[in-house]
Length: 415
Figure 1 (cartoon, helix red, strand yellow):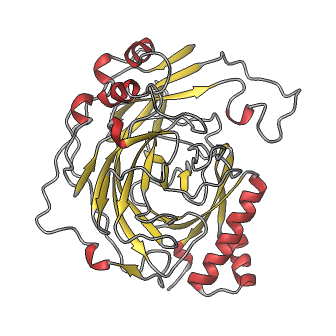
Figure 2 (cartoon, rainbow, N blue to C red):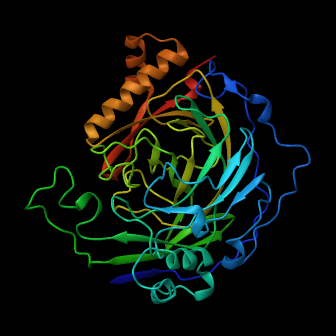
Figure 3 (tube, one colour):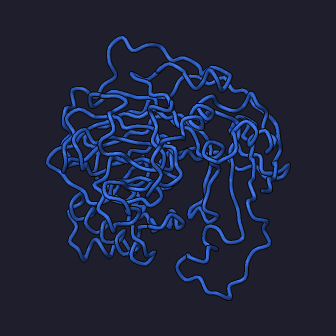
């Protein structure tokens, strides 16, 4: 195994309160969506004052809810390894409108066969920058089922009261923060889009000159008031942390992507339930909508990324342990067939398929449907507008199913 160490400098940050997002009536899925249990959506009276995060990884693994109503740590009993159990006892039950801080732990350093302290210090990381969560999860690996599962460590599920199959779960992403000042990115000659099993690969395709098992340890630090990844003295990549996995419990059927064992949805491919979407704009300030398949929705999150480009072409981003604050709402008498999201600038409509061309087709179809349902356009008008004003971006192409997202700019609509 080969590791590249990139600007090894540690950082200790003193974080202030998480900023609140202004909730706008009628915002969700367009102006016509009816919000169920809307009376619960305000912050509760007497909410505790925000608290700064403790400074050490050991303390941060057990931090209190602080600015959120509830806190879910990424302890062994609160995580699943590589799948979304549909019958796991919820780690928390919440009312719509309540906020939850959820800790996640990256699989990078937590799932390899080598003991994590030896593994991570061998990559050049100081012992005191290894989360206790990493050690606890690694110690809990024996006995966890692996058949049909993938590699992600996923926190959940959170049960949202009132959510029923056929509803839409709204997940408002209030905050995403780094828990440690490092992440890991993997590269290989035959990984990501260069895999020989990748669609379109040919036997005579050249291979990059990359040693097997190359790991890039990437430090993150606050520089000139912004958090960046220190790629080199001359390259600083701004951090834009987001959860690669945001999901409800799926309805797995053998033969679907990632389902080889009855009742087990592997975490690698995303789908209608969300999952490993790897859409980099699902960051703080964005709201995600997912179709509900089980009572309580059963929300999962994990696979934290400090920064990622559209495509995630090496197969990994900056894999980094993150903490997020989320607020949930349940929408009745409305259905969607695929994940959708929005922020202040865009509606984001996703298409997912094993084939990238089909994913683009699905995304376009969903955009046309959205413009018809929410903006009253005919199919002809909607398709015309999609071609004129909507950007279709390849969000990720390395997780079996591929994601294309249509970005509909909000400022083109005058009302």
